[in-house]
Every structure is written in C-alpha cells, then in structure tokens.
Image (cartoon, rainbow, N blue to C red; front, side):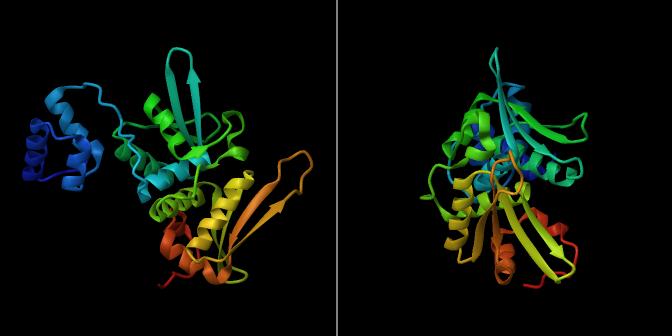
Amino acid sequence: MVLLKAEVKEEIMKELRKGTSINKISKLLSLGKSTIYYYYKKINGKKYVPPYVQPNFSEKEGEIVGIFTGDGSQYFAKGGHYQVNVHFGGHRKEYALYVQKLFSDYFCKKFQLSNLNDGKLRLRTNSKDIFHYFKNYIEYNSKEKHCTVNLKTLNIPMKFKVGFIKGLVDTDGSVLYDKHDDAVRIFYYTTSEKLAEQISSILRELSIKNTCICRTDKKGRKPLYVVRVLEKEVYKFLNIVKPFKQKLLKGPVVQW
C-alpha cells in the first residue's frame, strides 16, 4: 500500500463520499486504482466492485494486452470460474512482481502471484469481465492460442501499439548484449505468422527497420517466425519502446 499524505487521503475520501468513480479519482489524483479501492473499502466495506475494463487504447493498456498475448492463458470451469493467468519462468520474479502491480492497478482487481511445483510462477485472477476483456483487441483459437493469436486490427492509436510491442518483447522476446560483437540484439519469436507480420508492420510504422523470417528447423514442430530489429535501429527501438528487459542488459551502458 502506497503511503499517502493526510491531505491526499482526505481528498480521496471526500471524492468517494461524493460518489466520484474510482477511475475518475485515479486520474484526478494520479494514483493507482488499487489505492483508491483501498479507501473505498474503508467507507463501503468489502463490497464487490467490478474491475475496470473500459477500452481506451492507452500505452499501458497495450502493454497489458501484449503481456497476455505473449504469456497469458485462460481457463473456464463449470460453476462460473473465469480464470485469467500469466506465466513466468522462476528466474523472472522481479518482472512477475512488476506485472502483478501493473495488472492489479489497472484493473482495480487483485492478481495472486504463486510459485508452482515446477519452479515457475503464475499470476492469476478470477473475473468474467477480465476474461472477456482481451477479446476487445486480439483474436485467437483458444485451443491453439500461441499460433493463432493476432491483433484484430492495426487501425488503432500508435501509443497502444508501442505498449503492445513492449509487452510482447518482455514476454516472448529477447533483448541481449552480444559480447562477441559488442552489440545489443533484439528479437521476437512466435508461431503465429499473422502476429509476426503485424509486429514487423508496427516497427516499420515507427521507422524501425527489421526483418521477419520463418524457421522450420525441427520436424513435427510448427514454423517459428522471428522478427529481428536491425543492429543500427536497436537504440531507436529501446528509446521508443523502453522494454523491461532493457534494465537487465549486461554490457556497456546505453547512452541516449
């Protein structure tokens, strides 16, 4: 819970008593929705408040959709349990905590981070509204999400597309320092041909030159599409997209 000055707390309580929405107070005071909801509960008790799921195509929203596109999954169980998950390798706890806060603050709904038996991490919540939320932006076959997922349209604000690329690269992409060539390499890997084409197209819109190739190395496996940012475009990409993985680069400090 964020520590707030007394006058800020007072302002939150005043707005809540006036009936101002959690989302409006969040924007008015530049505070996370989960913080506002904390004070809402102090006034109203633990009354259910629907999560915030109104599409507005912001950059943060694009990042959330990109993260789900890369490492998200859904599960519906009889009895009305609409489960939404994001999966992480066990070595990525710092990023998992970042995503937990990002999702919880944005949706104004708690996401539980758990350690699984195989050493991996899972972020999870149960919500019918959030379960259906992602279909505002992406389409896919739920039985084969990884190779069918893609944006419904590219006719959307660029700020959303920048966030979307960030979420994708931080999940299924690579931002690595190549010591041998003294260079930073940026790749994105997917088995969805359409998604790969969309990523390449968005990068071109940003004037970031890239290549998109298909690898079919292993028999019985689906083709793997690799989008690579050209070496001379790498720092432009990092400056625009600002992926979380950038902070993990080992090598020379990037000077802008």
